[in-house]
Picture 1 (cartoon, one colour):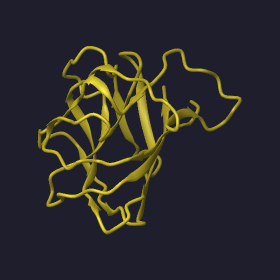
Picture 2 (picture 1 turned 45 degrees about the horizontal axis):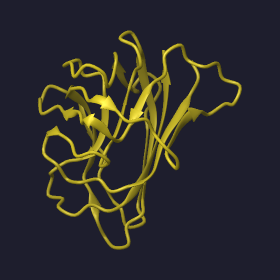
Picture 3 (picture 1 turned 135 degrees about the vertical axis):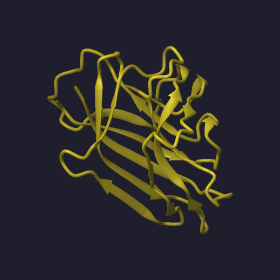
Length: 175
């Protein structure tokens, strides 16, 4: 397995209830094939707000996948950390816009990791210990199926009404 980093250079998350998310206010990641296993090992969020703004961010899985995701464009990126890595057979699906955005799962039985921080110059890093990484399985962004294969980094309604701009970088592997 070769490590990759997916990054959004800047975006402003919007505090939203579970359900269909607003395009360009989240980062969504998943496998390119039904048998793909995505293992997230590191997340870094960096605040870019010009005044104090609490971003009630979380990582959660989707209850209904997005439909027709839009490919990333510069200055956003997704690529190998090592230039000599072998290309994957199926390309991961990384996006922040889609014809139909994903549904962040409202189920209390689905894992959700709170990643809140002050976007006014704040930085948050989560480094999962080996064996405790965030893992998802399956195909993202094509059918709208309920399979929890998409990982969504988004802002939830948790007392936060005004979020600030931020960047995000996620280190992951596919197998």
